[in-house]
Image (cartoon, rainbow, N blue to C red; front, side, top):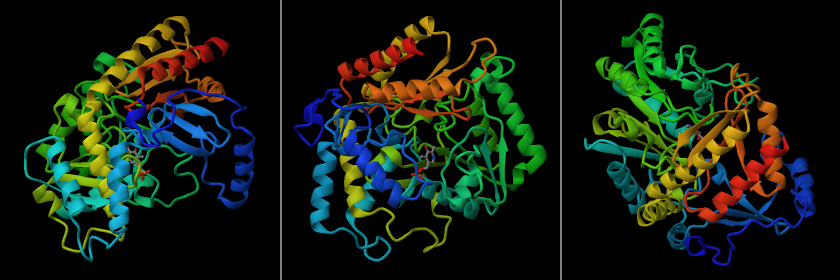
Length: 450
Ligand SMILES: *Cc1c(COP(=O)(O)O)cnc(C)c1O
């Protein structure tokens, strides 16, 4: 595994040598609390010195198994050889010109790669940005310019970012929106096919939820007023909800029939995370626009909107962009990350991670009644914890306690979900299978202790 990560000597092992966080991390945390705004949180305040492959090393000499990938970002590892090599070379050549002032090849090459890798063989173009939220905002601008309509439809449990427009698109109040309004207008939220919690059961969920969503759009908004429908093909922050079978195709058909731009937000689910280049491929969906970020550049900040050339070209020259969008170092990182994904066949690796994780988690579900649901695809897997499998009452306390127990043992896991009761696993796709299993052992021991 070590050869996959830069920082060549970084041992691929879990090592707990102090309490977690250890004394040096606690010291840094005290400084941080003095200097860093309280609104910026950290899941686990261990201060990082090196990371790569499947581990994160901290200032106290601990080595944590990484089941978070910096929120689905470092899919190729946090110091992937090709990313480090290409970004370092670019850094030495030039750091910035602003693509809107004098362009450079790396930006064009990333857009060419995006055209090749995203679903559909129609003519495609891309624009590059710095963050996922910025990509989603720009997808809305482009869709509005193309359709000359204003309304945007989003879904229950959806997450699209923290800027003003994307806060409006995001479903969950706390912590993302609370106290930060007023929010952007012309945003409408409709039901999503959340199979586990659908009143008539998961089998009926896809078609029923699609009918409800479409009914609300036509009755409350008017299809002819809708510029874009935006959805995550696997909902991320909302709890790794896979819309029940049939839901996405029905929504896509409705969008196509009504001249609405269908936007797949693949910021979390894209770039091999779910065992496909993009999660929407699993139901044969070809989005009009697709937003990407997170996994795209091996940890460097980059985001993109990619889509049908005629839609992408609807915005007037100068209408899209930003000072840093498609920074040359980030583009070099993206080309290195994409090279790594192809060379190591990280889609296959993600599918293998799913096989290992789902097998182990299913065995845990038999033993521990509080695992209500196991879901997700590839290396985007989650368990939803409940107080009782019959009532399905959410159990955020158990999720919090389990995450804490894992952290203490040197396994970094994250929680998510509208009810805060979902443990999510997003290991780097290059993690070794021994580390993956060791992480799962710790999770199992955590359940046993609950
Ligand atoms: C993380 C995320 C965003 C926002 O990306 P940032 O880079 O944090 O702005 C948007 N959509 C989805 C689905 C995400 O997971």
